[in-house]
Length: 298
Image (cartoon, rainbow, N blue to C red; front, side, top):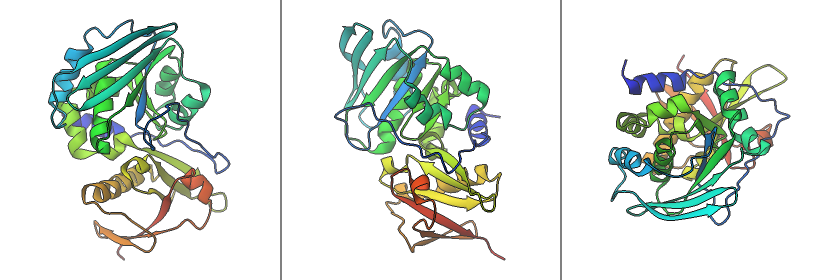
């Protein structure tokens, strides 16, 4: 099995954890002055890297395979020592990423909005929670969302961290899978096959009256699209991930926007979109959200 297929299989095969309707997650944004919604990640470490030695050559290899336009060799445009860390600015053609290294772990709220709600195993999440330092990466260029996220993940992978957290998507990426992503083949595979699976998050909320589950997304707003929720039987997490991935990619790549009353056809299924009729606050997290009704052929 190829590394790309192995990565996709492991990504799709994650167990989707439970969150009760009483839990109403909120996005914590520590970045000031970035566009809304902000594009930022946190790379986690046992010990803060004292410098960026070797980063630029590793980053150039990743950027060469990233399909980003007008990429030039990455340069360290600024470096500042701080009392509890450092700040740096990287440029690569039109791309600018600011890195703030801190010799402290993420706050409990930041970990809750990323590691806690992610769909990885308890062992993987425990390893990420055990970090002792982090580097905050923020994009300061106005680029299409897929280019911005490709850039941020490339820089994060070049840092060789324990993993990466993404509070906007309520998601994280363990280091072993980030290593697999952080190759030219991995970057190309993600761009071609499953960007939504990497760049967004999937939550689930049990409906108390019948035991069914609302699967709902986080992070679609970064693509200018509403998040989606689907009521389905327990154990439908993999199908939900594939469904949402296809719907986001369709909207984004074909410049479409689903709205209440719209329908779509896919693989013999008819999907109808509407406003939530229950648990709207929990499903939306304060963001635009549509429910998806999936009708299969008889």
